[in-house]
Amino acid sequence: MAKYVDVFGSWEDAVDVAKDVRENTSRFAADGRRFSLLGLTATVLGLNNADGYDGLFEEAVTGHPLPSEAFFWGLRWASIEAKRRGRLDTASQIAHRALARMETQIPDSYDRNVMQGMAYNFQALLALRNSDVESAHQLVDRAIDKFGDDPSHASLLPRDEAARYAWMAKLNRAQLPLLSGDYDGARAQLDALLIYAREYDPSAVHTTLSALALTYLKSGNAAEARPLLLESLDLLAVEYDPNVVRQVRKMLFATYSMLGAEASAKRVAADSSFFWRSTRAVERYEP
Image 1 (cartoon, rainbow, N blue to C red):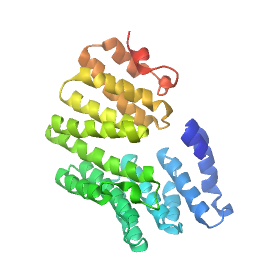
Image 2 (image 1 turned 90 degrees about the horizontal axis):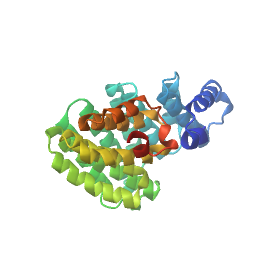
Image 3 (image 1 turned 120 degrees about the vertical axis):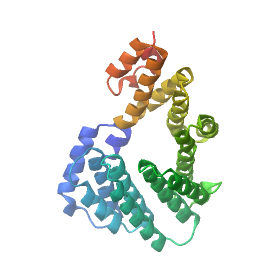
Image 4 (image 1 turned 135 degrees about the vertical axis):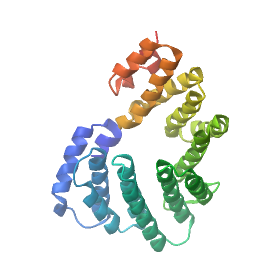
């Protein structure tokens, strides 16, 4: 199942396997592997609007012998409730519970700081969804403070993974000025994050590019947004979640419309989700 999702992106096959796991959980021994399997199964089911994911998440969160793993499954569960179900209060409760359990089980350490930072950053996103910008500022700043300047000190988390979580918080912080119309302020932070992503975290480049493109679209500069979005789409060639791709394509459609390139805009709207796996975006959309 992990291979299908992470490599091939065949959701249909992944869901079939997940449903089989859901219906036959008794055949898996009660050890760390069982709870990790249940968490992955719940993730696939939740992302595909299938039933039974919440019970599997509950077991993964409460039963996993490693408190760090239990925390991650809890945060993944909360994310699905917020992003796919729009249940913001439920997501907040799950995230709070995951954080509280982790804090009672993991001693004061850099790993604990990283996980606290992840939880605060998630709560900041929920605050934004609830239009509470002031709380979002406070929470994301608190998250960045928890991550510190060098997330390589983590021992439970791989260095690259810890650095990614710190980058995510900074990315969210960089986008907050957009809400007040401070596009130059947002752009300055995003430019710095793009330099970092290109050098240290290539898988983060497409998200930074699309966020940067949004600052140009908001300020009416579609010409500057266009190359950023085209590059972002090319980098999404291995993305398996069409919802991620859809957001970038929506912005590219708006960009071409603003530029008066109606033929290109129509091609963006008409194409299937994963066309660019064999064709570069600029060749596909432009004369």
